[in-house]
Length: 461
Image (cartoon, rainbow, N blue to C red; front, side):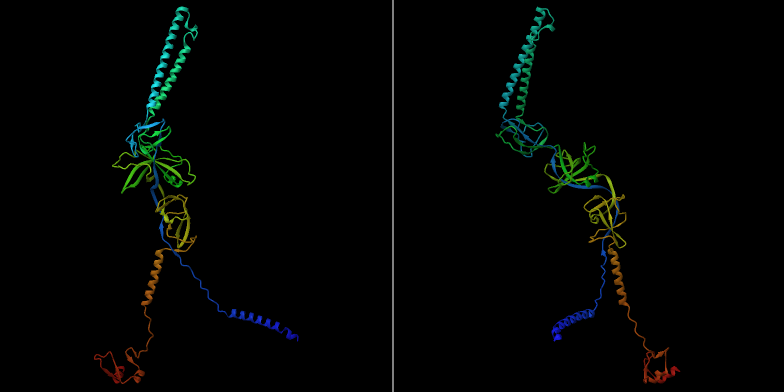
């Protein structure tokens, strides 16, 4: 009874043990898979030799032309516009001091005449007081018989003379103000220039301080160029650089632009470099000046005007020296990959000059690159020190050798197994004679006929 009660439990344990044994047996009988070790083929790369190069550095920048002197003309008096010059139009050319616009001067002319009359009256008062003083001095000497030094200043009319002189000075000041206001009715610029925009027309009433237009001087044009600190160093410039003139210190600059279908060129010089860095872009700005851009030079008829977007080419004053490699060889800004006996080497470099195609690297101990190093120019994904690489010519040689081996193997025919020949040194043995047929065709007979067995035996004898 007790055994029957534990029978289900024992049966379950047996099933579990059987399952475990079955799993163990299946794992033991499982065929072992062979592990195949695969090797990644070396990466094929392109290389160039690092060569020594000395050259004058040319850098091209872009900037917008602006006038060195660009001002807004405003009225200094109030009145109606009574006259406008024919040159007072957008693009109009004018000379220094030439009247561009005339304000009604009637009121100012009246004020000028009144001031002139006041001056004349004050001058008469001074003359009268001076004459009275001279009479009093003569009477003092003749009637009193005393020296002039002992006379009372009021007796000699000195305070009256001072008051008359003061009134004369005030009248002269009023005259100067009246003349100045009268002259201000004629609006002009203190330089030769051109009209950029105008805001006044004939008959328009202008209050004091109103804008009548904007003008710029044509003597000098400027171009502001953004530069990096590396470009500043390449060109031999410094922060706060300033040239007194193009003949003494100015770095030559060539300003050019495509106007219509022709290339226009102007010559200028680097006038200055800012002494501060732009806080937004972290760039430095240099100013290029072009003198007399509106004058025709060597057939140049297109002037350099404000608002044009131009290219400016600058050259270094001295030649730069270094190791030249293609720009694609520069990695991460300060590294190059070098081929060394089918392995990749990482070398740190310092850039001296960068163009669109080439990079010049320092060779004075500041760079690990050496003359003649084979620099990698092709992309190398996942590059690391010691990475296996191959050159295209080496890979081509290996492929050519493999193809040549295949060709040679295909041309070699297998050697056939030796066949037992009945003839040994032209003779027929006894066994051959016994088993030979009645006739044996001998290819060696002259007539190609058949020889009998007996003849063969005789020949053997």
